[in-house]
Amino acid sequence: MQRREFLQTVGSATPAVLAAQTATVSASEPAQAAPRQSAEPRVFLYDDGRHAGPLYQFAPPLTPEDFVLTVDQLVGSGLDSLVYFAGSEGGVALYNSQVAQIWGDNVKKWTHFVWYRASRHIQQLIADGHDPLKLLCDRCHQKGLFFIASNWVNLSGGDRKTHGGQGRKSDFVYDHPQFQVGPENDPRAEHVAPTRFSFLHPEVRKERFLVFEELLSRYETDGVELNLAEYVPLCKFSQVGQLEPLVTNWLRDLRRAAQKAEQAQGRRKRIYVRIPTHPPAWKALGYDVPTWVSENLVDGLICLPGLMEPPMDQSLDISEAIKLTQGTQCKAIFGFGDLLGTQLERAATQSMFWAAAANGYHQGADGFAIVEHHFTPNGWPWTSEEYQTVRLLAQPDMLATADKTYRALFVSPVQASRTDWLPGTSRSLPQPLIMDQPVNVELRIADDLAAADDEGKIEAVQLRVRLAGFEASLNEVRIELNGRLLPDSALQLNDLTYRLLKKGAIHPYGYAFEYILTPEFYPRQGNNTVKVTLVKIDPNIELQMAVHEVDCSIAYRVHRHFERKPIDY
Image (cartoon, rainbow, N blue to C red; front, side, top):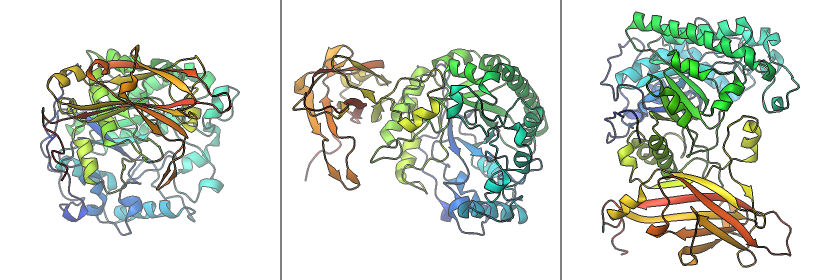
């Protein structure tokens, strides 16, 4: 259940209207603050400022009205906070910085078509007298939104010959290759970039500090977000013990800068950190998170299942962050990566979003964050489906009886190769299916299905177990839910051995076991275990079988006896 009162007043607001209907805004126009949607940020949308917006997709020249569409699409959506990437991983700024180079400042000949356009847009707006970051700050405050400026805490190195025509790296990066971590013998190092910078160098810490200080003091931001989930660890693996006090002292300095900016602007300045959710990972990366919280150095922990570009993890366990922040001013935020990457869906579906948010609030999360470079399940601009999806993300009571699809954690081999070295990551699918060796799959479900069933609101509860390399007529499995064998009377087999769809053949080959559950077999609120045991095997084949996917879909009625489709014709 929730541990802090969750205030939100925008759930039924009308979706934002796009560019053609956007009110005029200019750099000289004062920001007249609209009423805040909540006292503190609750639902965060991350946006890298480039992909899903004007910098890449609009032809030059840009007007201020064009540029602030990144903000306007959030208005009335239920999202109350924009986390905007104000810089690149190579140290250049997407605004008129006085302490960092602006994208394109050090380029002689461009070698990237789209990044050239983005730089032209930024440089053109500045030349016209419009600081891009001020435009976004002002527009957010006019529309009652929080504006959080994000940036990388670490830098990605490179050489001028290779990267000089892309504009994404600063002269500071090019001129100081000695600050790169470089090769190391630790086996974990094969999964991370040796060109990342080392935070052990005071020059690196100073350069990054000046950038974040500027975002706090020169602009009327509502705070900053520190990306501590990329280009990590911030030193060699063998040096994380040395790193830990340096990062904490750096945060102390940044907190003092935030307090100074608060006094000067009369505006609350927050510091959020994007980190893995698991304490063993904090230790492995050299992050003394308990001290950050106890000394009030950070205002929020944006918890991820691992590092950036995370797998979609609806069951993300943020209990340690909740326990750590209990009784403090620091918030524990459920960070959700929506990249699904299946054959038919690139991003999480609406019902998957609602399931993730419900799981977060059920644990006691203070908020929900869509932590992606861009939120574009159906492309950009958003469709009505995106607005309906995000409208509920701040509303735990409305989520309670929203349709949901809970999917067990699935990590592709590529994703696994990036994060397997990080301690604390959860076991995931796919898992090999071997004779008489049960596979246990965990599903966290927030819904109180018994209570909803008593009210007549349950339309259907379906458990689906998808098996790869499995032929149902030649092999046999036992499938149990919370220790109870699921009956054949509830089972419908779905043959996926070879099916041609519009986008090609379904993969992997196999079968899906689909159970329409009756109330006595409903999943319980909280953690559930699906147990799959191979009990008979075809001796004529040597291919590996696997438990590929497990999910549970819950469909609700609006009210008892109220069917969505009352008649067929």
